[in-house]
Length: 204
Image 1 (cartoon, helix red, strand yellow):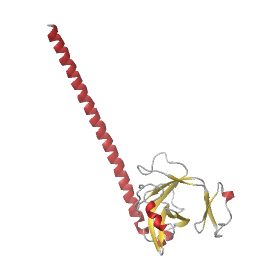
Image 2: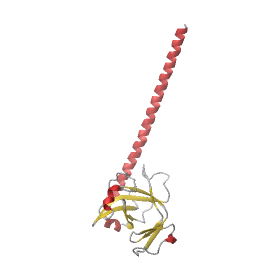
Image 3: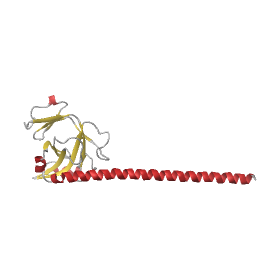
Image 4: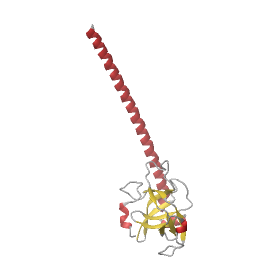
């Protein structure tokens, strides 16, 4: 009789363990499905926004002249492993179809759009694009020919560019930057600030 009771208790315990295992397995599978769905939705959002940005900027890829006609003016000369920056001051906020800055590579008479860029006065609480990473650009003065002079305040900006005499354009505080390498491959990633593959253009 005692043996039968022990066998009964053991069977009940095994049944409980089996039920718990099934419950854990079911919960894990549900969590995995939810995580997979969330990742899939995030990836789909990024792909959609990248497609929008590419469609909107395709006309500028090898046509800097058109970009200038549409309001983009030079704000930096060549930044090594990055490019020349052209900004449209009329573009505000984040819109994948309207990047405020176009980053060009230059060689000879050829200009090639490499990246687009958005800037923020502080790091966004929610990434504008899924998975976005950021860089920074120190406070400074910009001039009409793309010259840049670091300065903590506008009052510290020279009236004209010290080396070229170009007219003062504007000053900005420290900025958080988000590059997106839409038109040139970057082994460091889509959102990296610098791109080693554009090094051949550093002297362009």
